[in-house]
Image (cartoon, rainbow, N blue to C red):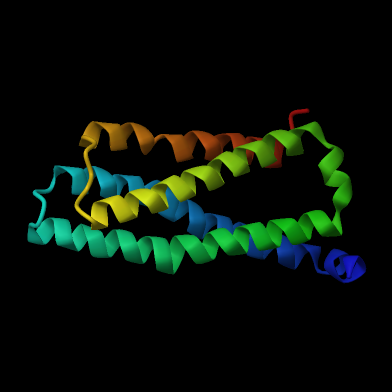
Length: 148
């Protein structure tokens, strides 16, 4: 199996990158929707529209892309386990685990908004909107520059 994966490594990498792009699109957009949703009056047409947008973004784009990113990334590591000995990979994987945790937090907030139970101000979500960006910067620098 490892040989098959190694022979198709560039395909795995391409599928991994495509998955990451889709996942990150959602991770960057969903908290922005939370900002607007927090500003909308509960029960308004606007708030109900945000509920639909948030649910669809999570279920149709983010969750499948998240699973695919982990799948193709894991297969790449299986094909090339020597990567696990690189210090930069440990930093990258730590940032990915943090991004995964944030994904689950965002999923919880989708449910909170769907139940009209949000108690946080839009400013909180504006700040949280920056967290995926910071993690993404770390991940890309580690993967591309491999600084150590």
